[in-house]
Image (cartoon, rainbow, N blue to C red; front, side, top):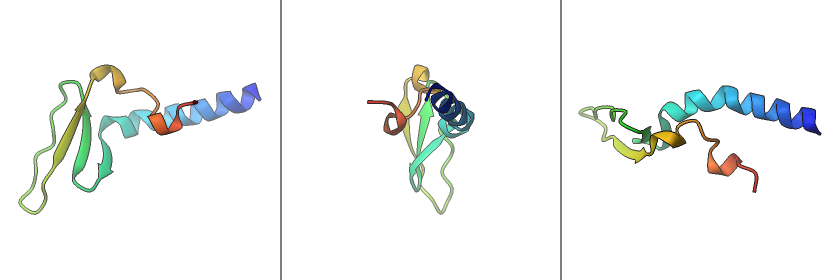
Length: 67
C-alpha cells in the first residue's frame, strides 16, 4: 500500500508543476500565482485571470487531495 501511495504521489508531482504554472479551468480563464503576469488577450479571445497566492503554486489541486 505504501509503495502504491509513493508511486501515485510521484506521478502526480511530475504533472503538477506543469499544470500549476497556468491552469485552465474554462476556455479563456487562467489561474496565475503570486505576481505572475496574466497573458494578454488577443483580438479574437478574452483572457480572464484568476489570481491565487504564490504559496499555492505547487499544492496538489483540491480535487486530488486526500479527504
